[in-house]
View 1: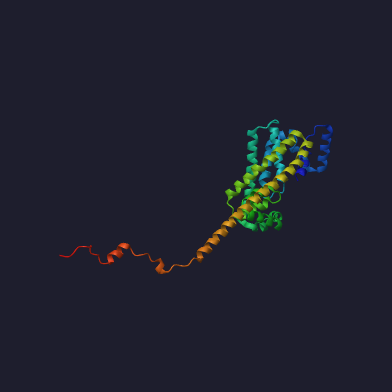
View 2: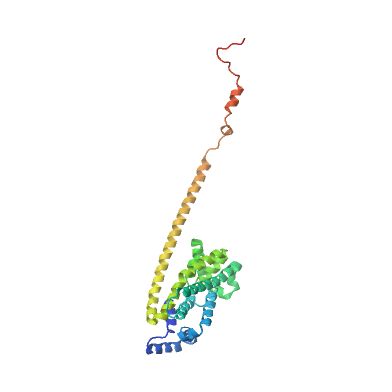
Length: 296
């Protein structure tokens, strides 16, 4: 998917040679209106003249993809990196990139929260209420995400945000399961802050190095992301397996202790009666006369 997106958008990046310009122009003509529009977004001059409209479009799409807009949000995140790089004049300025990162992250969280509210309000009945949701939440995806929540709890929100195709299902399921919004938003924001820098960086590289370099990097990045995701998944699964095994051992020990206590013989009332006080016993007996003394 990453390679496909990169090829689509790199077609809009001006090539350094005349042959590259001709190839890009021919590709745009063949691709239709969508590529023509993307060509404008990725044209540095047009981009510079329409910064306000581009940022409004980016934020609108990032919010809308959270609750069902059928467009990959990675496209708009790469465009954000591309636009920011040209805004700074081809330099990394942290106090400009940081607000971009936060703005994109919060836009995603806002859109995801709409999906969470849909699940919180209507539950799985949201599939019958909205046709686009019914198409997105298939039985197969629903079973997959339910398994994530059963096994990993809130981690399901984190992984669901990173996996394209199940994001909407994950967010609606989080609401359906009545997960508190602030917990959902916190985990969702963490996932955004972990993943968005990668897409912003790819947009910067598209702007800085052109098509061939970015296309080669995208292949390596796809492999790296896949390997990193597998490693992270193995770590999380191992952690939960160890935790569940320890919990099962503690529960078994507690159950065995209850059984041992239930088998102890009950004490009789005589055994439970406390011994008489020694002073009381002494007082109940006649006092012994001192030896060697006689009555007058």
